[in-house]
Amino acid sequence: IVVRDKNGKVVSRLKKKSHSPTSNFIALMTPQTWYNATGQTRNIVNTSNSSNTWNNDFIYPNTQFIYSTYISGIGIGSGTSSNSYSMYNLAAPISNGSGTGQLLYGTLSVPNSITINGNEAYFIISQMFTNNSGGTVNITEVGIEISLQGYDRSSGYDISYGTVLVWYDTLSSAVSVSNGSSITVYYTFAVNP
Image 1 (tube, rainbow, N blue to C red):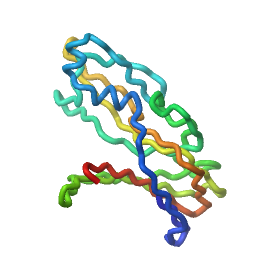
Image 2: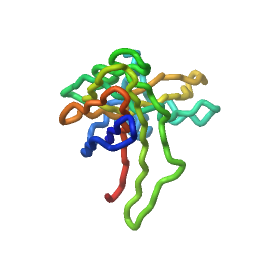
Image 3: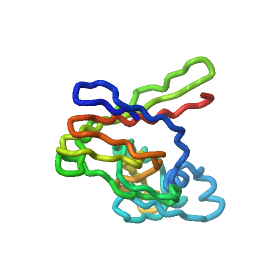
Image 4: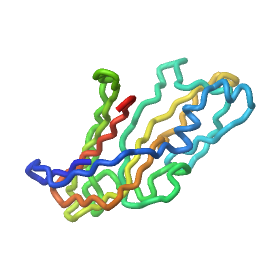
C-alpha cells in the first residue's frame, strides 16, 4: 500500500503478507472432481449477501458463451473482521465518490501476462483511490472482488453470481488518506518468492 500526497510525493508505505482467502475462493478452487465424487455443494455468497449453490453441475469459469469471470476491483473499507474465511463483503466498505468518508475509485490494473524471473513467477494487480472528500479517510481493510459467471450444465443457463469477495485482509493499523491525497493498493501473487 502506498499513500501519496496531492503532489504525488510518497508519504507512507505499508507492506504485509496477505494470507486470507475467503470460503468463496476455496469453493472456486476446489476441483470439480471433488464435487462429482462427494455430491457435496457449497454456497457462494456475493457482496450483497445473496447466496447461490455451487455443485458438480456448474462449470467455472464459464467458457460456454461470452460471459467471463474477471477481477472487478480491489475493495477498501474502514472496518475489521476477525474471521476472514467467512467474509463475503468488507466489514465497512468505503463508497466510490467525493462525499464525506468516500474515495474516488481509479481503474483496476491487471497485467496481460505473468512475469517470470528465474524460479519465481508473479503478477501484480493494483488500484488507486483518491480522496476528494474534504476530510481524512482511514482504511483498515482491503480485499479482492471478482465478477463471477458460471454455467449450469443441467439447466443450460448462465448464472451470474454478481460481485464476490475472494480475498480479505485487515491492516495492522489504519492507513490515513488526507484530503487531496491518494492511496494505491497492490496485491502481488507469486510462486517461489
